[in-house]
Length: 73
Image (cartoon, rainbow, N blue to C red; front, side, top):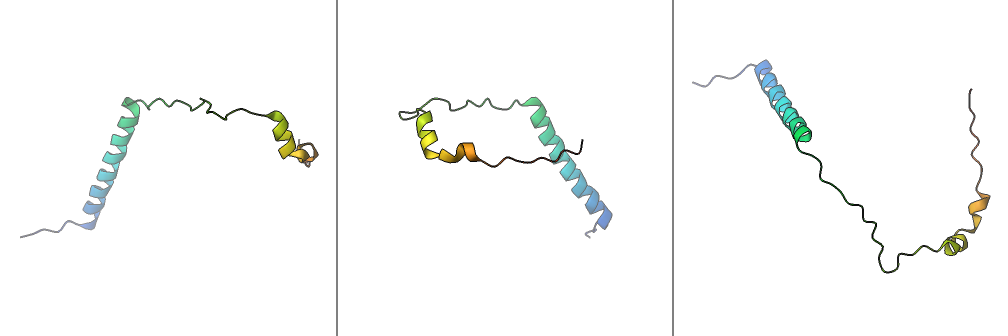
């Protein structure tokens, strides 16, 4: 004979499974440190910055519209 569970028992089982997963994930975050990430700041062969070229490429940087902020204070 097979007994079927009432619907509210299935709901409790689903809630318990989700809670166990969330608790396990929280414990993992608590006890295992995040891996250290190193920024890739090492320049390549052509990684020099030419300020003059930036001025040539973007000549209208000085003519940008001014943002008008309406401060209620």
